[in-house]
Image (tube, rainbow, N blue to C red):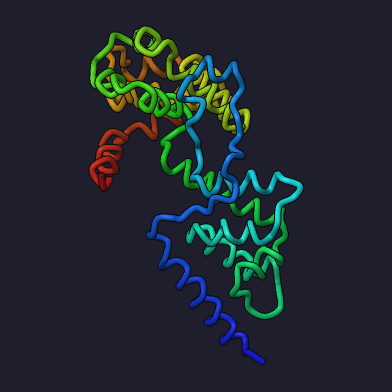
Length: 277
């Protein structure tokens, strides 16, 4: 019988071996060809090419769709998971975690998925996909801008210009692309079936001044970034701190914002300069 130490070492080596393959591009099995999810006619008219943008990797999308099928077979699930080394490593790690408390060491994906069951495996796949998506998008409000960049090549030049204020930016987006990034973010959040809070932030983050919910917090964050000239698209309507506090921050919270404001620009610049582009 393996000792606890031997089990741990076997588990570590198995997961480490799987992780070493994570840099290799996934080879996606064509087990769901011809079964792609269709967008609605309304979404097609409103978004055009944007309706077909996908938030997750092709492997994650196909796996999540496979779980929704009544005739899904464990061999199909294993085949898909094997094509994504990062996902395979996560599932193996979870199957060997104290939360599952399985006897022995799980070193085989077929065994791991059988131990976890469909729901747990789907949850791991969804969590990993969301984590990856959120790393790529700085905040939900930028989802619409990513969509406009993907749809219209002229938008890359658009974002390099300077505008009078945020309403002028939104109007210029509508003139160029028919929709502004708030509209696109709302429709994409709906098409991707993201939580309602994502849709609210994407569509209302420039229209929530004075609100104290998460949408209002994102609005304030955007406004403060604009005031420090760290706006996503440059404009001339930045405000001094005290004017911003009086306009956008409830009185009870103003001292807290003042205390955190000192040195904020230097801290942001340090983080920006540390990014590896």
